[in-house]
Image 1 (tube, each protein chain N blue to C red):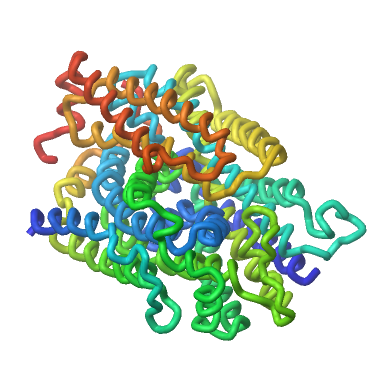
Image 2 (image 1 turned 120 degrees about the vertical axis):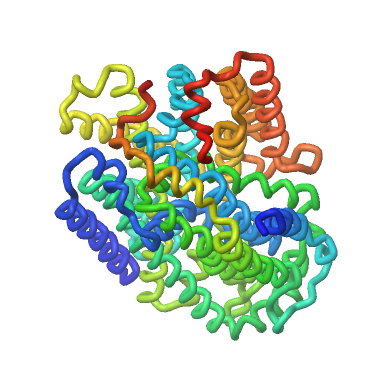
Length: 80
Length: 506
C-alpha cells in the first residue's frame, strides 16, 4: 500500500501541470475560471491523499525511535 | 480613525497575550526556547501555518494576482499544499525525532552533529540570517503598505507626504516593537500562542473580507464578469505564465524544509502524532487563505466604483491592492478588523523569525564557542534579545530604503532556502553525504543565487526567468550537483555518526 501511495504522490505532482487549462477562461459556477477551479479541486484531493498517507504509510519506526529511546535535555545536542 | 482604533486595540490584545504567556512560563531554557516540547496538534498546526503565511500570502498573493492573474494560485498555493505537507511528513518528522532523542534546540546543532563539523554550522549561520532578513523585510513592507492604505486621509495635517495615511516607517516601528515585546516576555511558548490567535484572526478576517467585498461588487459572478469583459488575460495563464515557469515553481515550497524558525516549531511538538493534524490541515488552510486572495487580486484589475472609476487605480503603491479594496468597499469597523487580520498574518511570521534568530545566535555561536557554563540564564536571554534587536534594526533600516514587490522578494528568499534543502534531505536519507559536500552545497547556493539576484537588480525587475524557468531551478540543480559530486570525492562520515543517524531501527 505504501508503494501505491508513493506512486500516487508522483501522479499528483504530474497532474499539477494542467496544460489543457492554459488558455481556457470558462467560468465554473459563474465565477471560478477553469485554471482556478482545477487547482481548488486538486488541493482538496491533496488533503485526501495525506489522510491516506497517515492512515497507511505512517512512519511508526520514526515515532518509536523518538519515543522509546532516552530523551536528551534541550541544548545537549550538537556538541559531540 | 475607527480602523486605527481597532488596530490599536488588537495590538494591545497581543501585548496582553504575551503577558499572560509570561505568567505561565516555567522560566527554564527548555521552556523559553522550545515551550518544553509540549505543544499539541492544534497549536502546532496554527503556529506552523501562521509562521509560513506572511505578508506574502495575503498582501503578496493579491498583489501578484493583480499583475499575473489566477496562475498565482497554482504556482504557490496548490504546489505548497502538496510540497509543504510532503516536507513535514518526510523531513519534519525525522528532524523532530532526532531533536527529541539528541537534545537539539536549533537546526545548526543538528547539522553540526550529523556532519561532524563545527565549521559547517558556523558557515551556515550567516547564510540563514542573511536569508531570513528578506523574509522579515516582506513583513515590515507589507504591514507598512496595508496600514498606509487603510488610514489614507485620517491625518492630513500630520502626514502630508502620505496623503494623511500613517507612513510605513511608523507602522514598521510599532509592529517590530510589539512583536519584540511579546516574544521577550514569554519566548517560543508566547510566540506559539500568539500565532494560534493570530492565525485564527487572519483566516477569519480573510474570509470575511472576501464575503463583504464580493457583496459590495454585486456578488462573485458579477465581479468576475467585469474581469472577463475588461481583462480576460488574468483569468487564464497563456498570456502571463510560462509552462516551465509554472512547473519549476514546485521547487519554491521546498524552502520550508530549511526555514530555521519552522524547524524550531517542529521541535516543540509533544509527540509524532501532533504532526498529523498539520500534515492534513495545512493544505486546507492554504486553500482557505489563498483562494479568496487570488480572486480579490484578479477582481482588483477591473472592478469599478459606482462613479465608473477603478476601485484600485492603475497607479497605486506596490502591495496595496488588498488594503485599497478593503478601505473603499467596506465600513470603517470592518476595515479596522480586516486591517488587524492582515497585521495578524504578518506578525505571526515575524515573531517566530525574530525568536529563531536570537536562539541560533545564542546557542550556535555564543554558547557553542564559549561554553554554557560561562553565562547565567539571564545573560543568555539578554544576548538573544540583543542580537534580535540588532537584526531587526538592520531590517527596519532596509525597509526605509526602497520598496519592492513583496511577492518577488519572497520568492528570492525562498529560492535561497530551497537551494540549501538538499543538505537536510541528504542528511536524513543518504549515509554517504559528507561535510565537504554540504559545504560545497552552501558555497554554490551563495555564488549562483547571489549572481542571479544581482542580475535581477536585487529583485527590482520582478520575476527573472532563466531559459523560461524560475531561478530556483538552476540554483537547486547546481547546489545538489555540488553536494553529490563533492561527497563522492571526499571521506565518508565515521561509523559512530552513521549508527547515530541510521540506526537499524529506522
